[in-house]
Length: 288
Length: 320
Image (cartoon, rainbow over all chains, first blue to last red; front, side):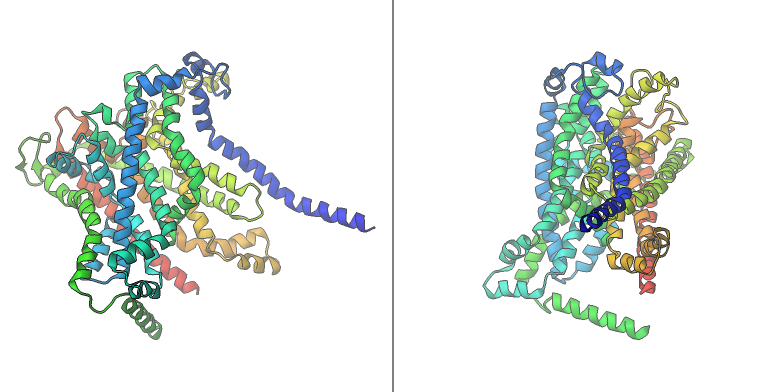
């Protein structure tokens, strides 16, 4: 008797969950379609050029052609472009994180002459598009002798729109209780020590969010790296290199797919491991 | 009402007073400015200065980067405003926005509502899958999609040929190019708006749903009487954020179509690029005039956003 009751209970629970599972299966189908272009690119990077044309949307290559990657890496210089991108991205992430953390901290914790204006200017320029600022940026980089160099590209990228990063730090530092800072001062820590050994470690989650967001923005940047490398093809980043690749060797489509995989895999891997911080950074825009 | 606002300001002043010391010495002031120095220098040179300099550049005649600049007043603006291609790019920019924003805002809301229900299995995997296109490099997606949609050798058309409807030139057809770019753009940035909505949905306490269900409300009623009213304030800010994002579309358009076929997808950013970097004799004055106009357009929408946030706050305030 009790066994029968238990079974119907379980059945009922299963039945109640059935619509959810149906929904989930439908969504998995849509999601598979959603990421299909990437799967196709991955498979295309292993097909030979003939199969690219005849194979259609088939995912499994009939023969694995690893040579595509060798061509993309050496002949299309994607090894070089990848190194450029890594260098530019890492230094930009460090610069942006430091400058946003210090600025956000000072603006949140101290009221000084000009602090309101400073914050106001930042907020007013929250959405300035690159297309608007690009001409003076190139012009001043030429005057400073920074055009056609990775250093100049890094500085221009880290000077661009990271207002939201400052605002995330600002919001976080603002809600830290006063007592913590006072305790540090009582312990004899000065301004700099208080920041680096008390406040910055506290803001670790924010730092992770800002670093991940900046990493992906910089890695994917296209407009600035494009105009900074017109006369120096060896300084291209992967996004610019991809555009040039198609212009130069229009027939090597599987090599192109391989180059695309080389360029995109690092950000996707980073995202998969650190997606929590990424999602937090984006949803911060709505919450604040 | 007035009492409440007085209390609020008093509380605010107390909080501000608690945050800053009444006076601090020159040493601390120095440190404050040292902390602000990296942002002041980098942001000053690469964002603030260009915003101001654009206005000056738009008033000079200037061929190439090292030639002399001669002041010509508003003649660059006259040239730009007389150029039908400029108004074309303005139209394309707005049309693209109209194609993209409603789909992004409303479709993502539906998906977010489904992905917000705690009973749904595989929720983490699904969220990640819908988000992955966002983190990939837009310029690379543009290049790859140009091949995928190629009329003669691309895989999409080879499938369509087998189904008996092949040879569609998605990016070469004047009428199809912009909608195709819009669909790709929606796909690429769907995840961003989805995350916005998920963040908004998470502000609705779960107890509210429970209570409604206990009171006998069906899913439709819950949606109409709880989800929609609670989300309304967010609709404004999410829409404006999405609109602002669609202005930053150079990467996809440039790599996908380059503004073609025959300027049918030339957004303002490509128009500026063409005059400043693409032309054999760069017309930087003219490009700057277009850039200033573009900056004003973005600023107007930005102002709209501030107003939207304000209105949203008021809406939320009224509900309490």
